[in-house]
Image 1 (cartoon, helix red, strand yellow):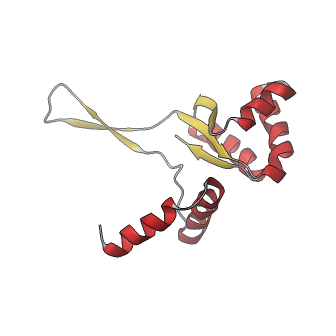
Image 2: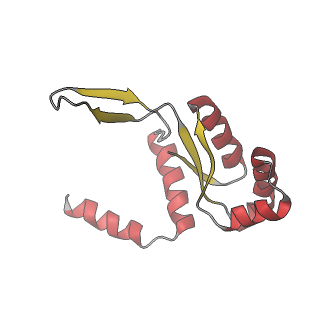
Image 3: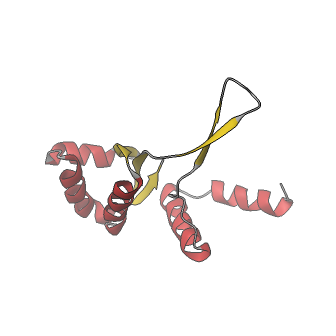
Amino acid sequence: MSVKTLEILEQIKSLNLNETAQLVKQIKATFNVDISTPKLIQIERRDEDEVQLQVQTEFDVLLVSVPPEKKITLLKVIRTVTGLGLKEAKDFVDSLPKVVQTGLNQETAQVLRQQLEETGAVVSLQ
């Protein structure tokens, strides 16, 4: 890595979680990148010479963080999506980062991600 890259990496390490989430959003917006696109996964066959590429079809929606002032709005969405009661949803949001739903197809995961991000939450697809 170049010296410049190492310096930037050191600066990023000093950010708190909210600052890091805001940085990620700005990078997405500035460079028009979307980390939620299907990732290619290499799967090795018994013949080590042949490598099959497979597109990821199942996604987990990971709720990373939420600004404190948006917590109540997010609680409403979490309750709707998960079917949790108020106390369980509050405990869920208080223990972030946490997976909201697993094994979703890409379209459903994107819709859920959008719903959560509209509340101000930082969401990741895995």
